[in-house]
Image (cartoon, rainbow, N blue to C red):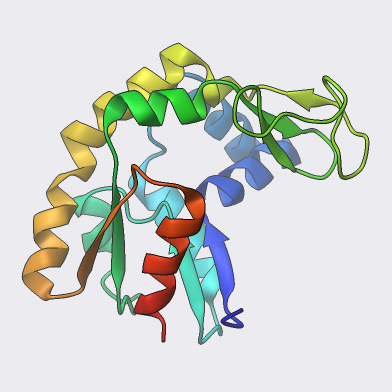
Length: 182
């Protein structure tokens, strides 16, 4: 709709992981435990991806003040903070299914596939990612509170933080976010 590329930090990490390189193997080990990737690695992946791009949306980056500091040369115009209670985060992530073939996303409760275990888009096998098990999600929430929450005040002071209530339907949340880009 807005003719911008969405760059998802987690997708970049999963792509590197899938390559099976030394870096990808290290990323896999860290991700599967629900821990954060070292700041320099993710910053380098992001910078390489946005090189020579004018319009993009970053998703999942930066995650903490150190990454924000390492990314000072990246132009960030708006930061969207989707505020949501922990129990809702756990409910929405726990039960998420991803297609091994096309990356389509489904949910055991909210977006069930038509055929159990099969992707509606391509028929590929659905699985639960190692970083989306209950224990990994709880670890990610803990790390988020310890490391990421400080970014809220950092970007608020810069005047570029926009808070969105995430405890509503996707359609309502999208309408709020959409207004920020008009």
